[in-house]
Length: 372
Image (cartoon, rainbow, N blue to C red; front, side, top):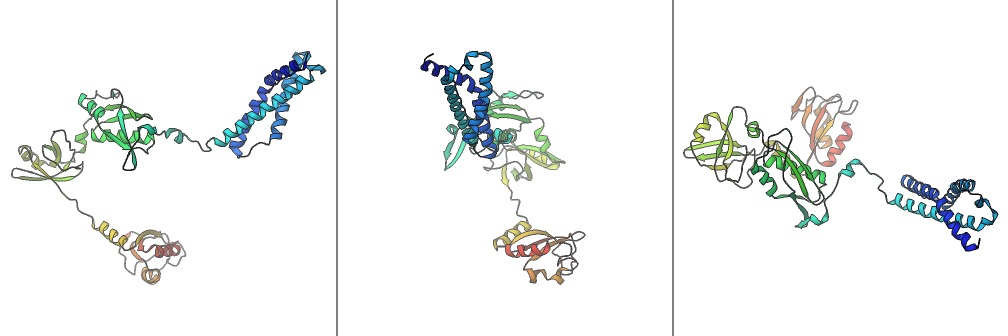
């Protein structure tokens, strides 16, 4: 045969013989780069490819005697060049893929799907997304059908959330918001990358009765309520000659009366009073929170430490150690056998006792080194 024909035959022979060496070279290049971060030397790829190609070529030679002919030297040399080119190319691609593949891929990362940038709105420099309920709201198996009014409220509601949340967390927040605002017994939500939600929900099953405290009665009062009123707020209802304090169980702006938990003796009178006025009462501030706020404003911090066995505090009293004078900290509480608030200087200290101390950050660090 002429030389051009031999070269074409060699290219053909190199392609069918080089498929397996190229596949092995590519896989090894990817695995080696992904695991170790190091590229396999080109000489190693050449040796490996020639070894595998030699096996494939030997098998072909057994089936075709013309391949073993000495006249086929140009074709064999061409085939060797083709095999090496294919193998080196496959190795380079595998190496590149191994370098770009994420090194730590977990199931959590696979689950953390994110929203498409097309649905994100920038408001005040921050992204937000409006979740749209797609299709009909489905009923949940094992529960009664959802009322038509609740279905409309779910579909027509304005459901706006931060756009930087993974879709899994966005689904949880949407479900919790539906459960809270509409008193649903159960909710299942699925949101895609376009912020389209598929919702299945169950109607309330005695949700209000579960929130009425023991010994109280729920009374609905139509009234004008302040913006922001929420479940758990303490209010005073003024109607006719009555003034009744109670706790808000739910507040709606749909024209329905607002349920309030009150004492049994006041429930009957409040039911006959008609429309009333609602005043939200302050719950006040606990004194201990006021104290910690004042201390923090002066640069003081709190820390809990334990007395170490054999340390300078073990076996002594607070007065003997001179905690305030030596370490510039004050002991607010100490636990020996039981907790003692504002302990005196005669308070004994022993191993494993716990102390709540207050002072500057540096003073607390120094005292913690002694107590440990």
